[in-house]
Length: 281
Image 1 (spheres, rainbow, N blue to C red):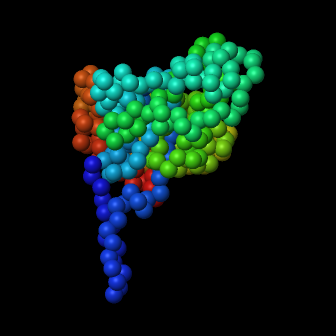
Image 2 (tube, rainbow, N blue to C red):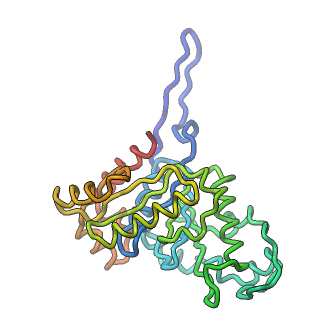
Image 3 (cartoon, helix red, strand yellow):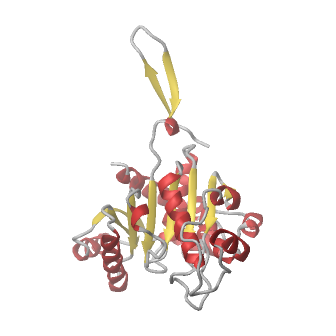
């Protein structure tokens, strides 16, 4: 892994060389957007770039489609080791005191979750990945044991963990809580040049404001030319746009081949690096 170093020299005294990862505060980012706009691509490349800097990175797949492992470039063996937490009925029952999939029953609202990231994360390419999974139907997304466990876990990760955290969300921000969002360095909405994607961005903005999220950014994706950049700027005047990702045949090919877009497109990596630098300002 590539690690940058800072050389500190004291006048008439000793000098020290410190890895940058020891002096940078951990950043925690959630990424959302309409299905198919490329938010998982951005999350995967962002996580890989941070890991390449020698930083501790925890990626959370909170999207029901659960494609973040592929975007990170996980091997077939690594994919087989992933266990979506919402599907672990024994864990849900143990931590909440209620059988998974039951509704209207009593269960703990503050289950123990602090050990879950280390127990259930699967690591490759220097990135630890936890997949939240899909809440069973019959009340999915409602006030149920699975949802309480997952929301408590995400709150813990954002409040207590010291890694760099990248959360691949669905558009609904279902797992976010008012307590956890105060510790997000940014919510990124990925938008492609189209009316439906812009409409989703407006809805995400409404949900974000309801939760008290103050740092909401936009990344334009699948952009082919300056006219599409202008289209997004004109239709998203109330948003802070922190970067654009170019339309890439290499990313499409990576999906067909089952490899990470990080490994397929050097230009994409550079664009995501620029976005990371803007987030840090």
